[in-house]
Image (cartoon, rainbow, N blue to C red; front, side):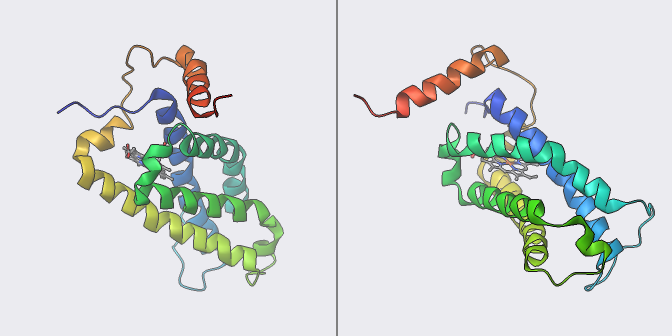
Length: 179
Ligand code: HEM
């Protein structure tokens, strides 16, 4: 059977987004433990300003996730036929959109009653559940070879960074209606 291969542009956007999502996930847990804790707290070793740290992660995450989302619904659309891929994208969109609408002073002032904050917490839980589903579905579908194809650094001929503009142009050429 042929080794699974993922386009290099997808690997860059998917890798960057998932790394930042994972760091944001942990820093979000620290924010919750420091400022909310209604359902229990984690003992924090580092008592820094977790809201600032969590908010700073949004600066690179928002544009990267936007590009990743655009890739997924266009060039990568076929992969979204897998429900576990599609729901991971929806959970990501919910977590990021509600995070952008949060006011950083709400939690500092003990205001945990805002609907947007509840939806942001739901996005955080959603990311946890859907990424577990996403990973187990990938392992079930293609095992370790499929999972590692997303973090591999190898590049086929015709899939170098200089080929990305022509890949995008080809996608739009084949999907645009013929005159
Ligand atoms: C941490 C958050 C993650 C999110 C939000 C996420 C989201 C997604 C999405 C939306 C797709 C579809 C992309 C497209 O349509 O072009 C996808 C594909 C994929 N992801 Fe992830 N992912 C995450 C983590 C991971 C991790 C850690 C791995 C394992 C190394 C992984 C392996 C894969 C693979 C192999 C595919 C392609 C599956 C296929 O060809 O059907 N993902 N991911």
